[in-house]
Length: 375
Image (cartoon, rainbow, N blue to C red; front, side, top):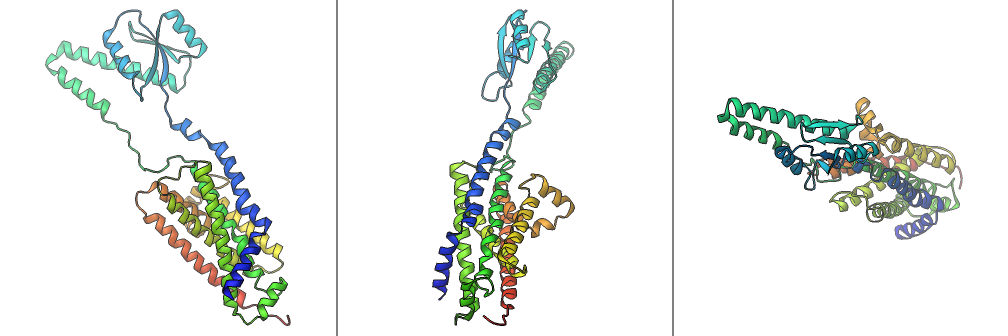
């Protein structure tokens, strides 16, 4: 009997157009909008392009020319230089093709703005002048200390190295994608409502037949619940696959575990819907409205609509992020991406398992209390 209930509930759930819209079409459309909106923002904010500058060699300065050559070569070069005369250099400056004009005679800088590029050029020329003055004074007064000064300055220049804190995707805007997957998971609560509506006699003829059938109610509930978990699992797999392979969202190097977190999140959402359906009295529309309000509220508090919301909650009521299913689900992806180990990811999976158990037991307890005067 479990097999038949599971099979036919699965088929009827797949025919639910509202379900297909919320759990498949809507996330795909929203993810495309996120991709278009946030694409390239992180790279533009953190990437560094060489600063265009014009060099006017009005007098030979071999030392400064060698420095210019060293900072204008290679992949991580500081400057993108153009050697020209003063007239053409000022013309390039007026057109905005360069951000500054550097004269090699007395290391003079001319700019026409106060942006970050002009600041970089000013810092570069000031640093060179200070270094040149220090070396000249040392060579004139204490020539024996010149090698030590040069070595000390070389160490100062090379002491800073770039090192990534995580091997995952550093793009901060990927959190919106995490929250999108979490929203799909918690919105799957609408499928969990069928666990109540299809096993209660006052909601449908199917529910009435199941109530008078010899099959234990626990078996009926588990069959409907498992079919809802299955449908949600398929929707979660489609969502993650679309994000990872169609939109090319970088989830790091642990994509199989992203699927695991999504599947657990979907089960959490279905179980939450089961609880909501058993607690909220009234028609299916009322239960469905309650499920969507709760789901969207949790999604909002996890940062789907406002990226900083979860951090605001963490500052004021940190315990809420541990009982918010959407926050727990999105955190599992976040920790999986930035952490080297798996401790925090596993802790979020454990919380989801606890939620599934609590929601399922609560829903079953309140569903079993249902009594009818007649069927």
